[in-house]
Amino acid sequence: MAERRPRGRESRRAARNRDYMIENPTQEELERITARRKKKRGGALLPLFAVLLMLVLTGGMLGGVLAKRYAPSTERKDLNEWFEAEGSEVRIYLNDALDRETLASAENGTVYLPIEWVNANLNKRFYWQWDDEQLIYTLPREVVRYTADMKDSKGNPVYKAAEDGSMELSLEAICEYTDLRVNQFADPEEEAKRVFIYKDQGPVERAEVKKGTQLRTKGGVKAPILTDLAEGDSLTVLEAMDKWSRVSTDSGFIGFVQNKYLEDPVEYTWETDFTEPVYEHQTLPEKVVLGWHMVFSREAALSTLDSYYENTKGVMNVICPTGIQIKNAEGEYLNFIDEEYVQRAHEKGLKVWVMIDNFNQPGGLKDFSTENYFAHAANRQNFIDRLMADAEAYGYDGYNLDFESLPTSAGPSYVQFYRELSVACRNKGLTLSIDNYVPYHFNDHYDLGEQADYADYVVIMGYDEHTTGSEEAGSVSSIGYTELGIQETLKKVPAEYVVNGVPFFTRIWKSSGPNLSSDAMGIIDAKAYVESEGIELTWDEETGQYYGEKETATGLRQVWMEEERSIAEKVKVIKENNLAGVAGWRLQYEPSDIWDELDLNGVL
Image (cartoon, rainbow, N blue to C red; front, side, top):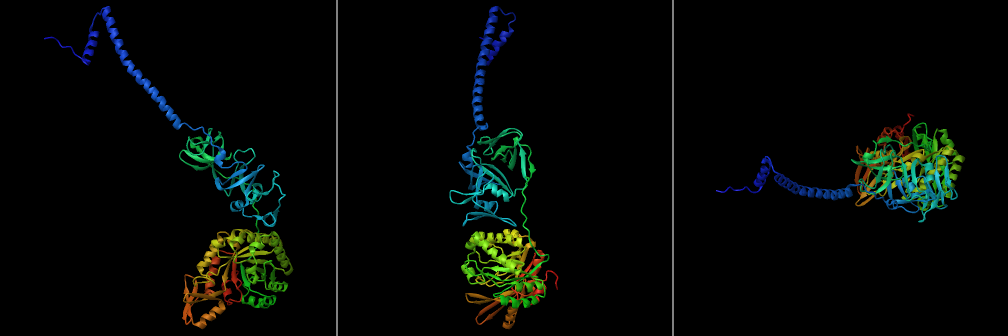
């Protein structure tokens, strides 16, 4: 039987083994063995080379893709596009927040801001006088008046008209009276003009760049570059994230930088050399206990002064006669308080603060426009000059300003009037007090914040919670209403300048079907009415008053009674909040015992 020869792997192994088993190969056998081995190695290397070549080519292609995907972008952002400002336009940043609605302008390196924006965001005390194109700023003892020919340090106008006709004020002039930190980039050669304004800024986080890098529009190396950052540059860190931080640079950019290029942030507080003006308050050395004295003639004022004072048991230390009443559109007024009245009041130890009102004469609210009249600088000055002349002639100790039912549009003119009036009063040694409704958003234009500086006393008229025209019957001044008025006022005015007014009257409400009306009565008369009608009163904890009602042949009668106990509850709140005093509207409406509760200075 013939021997079978192995095939495949066994044949190659057998041939290799036979090669190694030859003990003394001939030259021919050696050449054959060598040729076989070379052939084997060549066959093995060719596939390996092909694989390596393929890996190199694939790696190169993959590396290119990865480099394209992950390598930092070198694209630079167009700054005019980024800041959305070109030419003379200046983009505004306030406390590093971009204002997208308003643009400033630049002229020869001076930045001009719209005065409406300045009033709303930086300083409300710059007042633009449209009638005679005059810019006014009111200091504690001086009214500064800018004119069109006044220049800043660069020789540019302090203010100028914008293309739309509005007025723009130079940033340099604003900084003269406002504590601001400014970083501006508005020179003519600046590619994209912008200004960074900082106001009321507390501590910030600052970090240094530890290695040169780029500031980008977003957090990512593919985002366009805004500017280069050099080692040692200081940045303000606005928001720190895991790998990137949003920062503000001293070179006028806000963008993103990788955290690995930043040193650890440290807290920093900017220094300022600005000196705030001091608005001095001419206040009494004791608590104010004021009574409003309603008068409509000189004779009536004099004839009632003694008896009204006696009723207060000597507790009242300030009398406030309604002596100056505006009577027509031209701002003329009646004055019922002369030297004799003041002298007699002084003999009783009383201060005399004469009230100026816009409602007691028929032509007051009807014809006189606070908005239009006081919008003119000449009118304000004329009115104030007359008041100062009266005060000097008759010896007044101060004025009490009581302008009521003012529309929102009258706010700026009214506020500027009492600013300028306060300067005149302060320079003459006169006390200025201003009456206000209980604060609500719809009477914000009386501006308690400004009164806190310019007035010596801010008076809350803590009554008329429910009054003529109310949709429902209710208290004239519940304890909750008193607390509301005081707390809201204290948000804007320090307690040592706040006087709370209390009512010496109540209302008798009459309901008949859908019809509702009321009659205001002084406390004395209201007590008599309740007794005569047989209305039973019960103490109501919620309102802090006695309440009573009665059905009559003509409808329901209701009363929330003001009297000694309800007034005592209000005085308790005044004392708890350590207010400057109390005021009562109005004298001779109240029984004498009311003053036992109003004795803030321990007279009795």
